[in-house]
Length: 244
Image 1 (cartoon, rainbow, N blue to C red):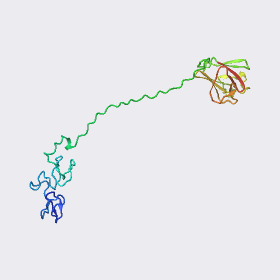
Image 2 (image 1 turned 135 degrees about the vertical axis):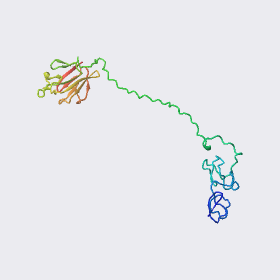
Image 3 (image 1 turned 90 degrees about the horizontal axis):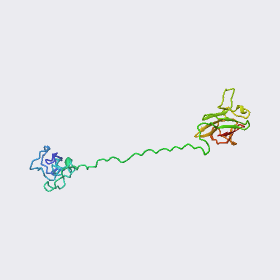
Image 4 (image 1 turned 180 degrees about the horizontal axis):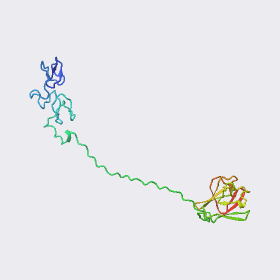
């Protein structure tokens, strides 16, 4: 095997010219030449022969003879190149000819403004109809019992339970209808509840056996019903009239 004195590439012993750079191979050259020691006559510093330049004409970086492109800037090495005096002067660029990064404007503060959460609207409590007093307690309303000709005054309370006394369990409701024939008329111990809600008198059947009726209409158990002045209440068969 013989080594090219121009580029140092190993060639077959029968080759007369280097397969890499095309230089003439001397006979019997079996030892590669010392790298980076070319003679002035054999390879000038700025030679542009077949072996290629030893320095990149674009960035001036030393290159290996025979390389097609510069490892530093990627410029072609084997093509025709202009001399340093004939090519225009390169701009003063940092990092070996690499163009600088563009200057972007500084980030501006965002103009986004968070919106306040929507205000929830609450339904206003119903207002008592005209002619009906607005109250917080049941008094001075009363229950008039036509059969007895007497009236039962409702207390200064916002809620009462109407029924009858049970001697077995010692239970006594807020309004006891025992003196008005509650047992005989089918009134339960906890029969009906009267309460004040948003200024209105509300009646609610407490799941009685014989039922509660407003103006002849039966109430569903535990279903509130608004009362008005003069409404007829019937618990079982005991009839009363509301006077507000």
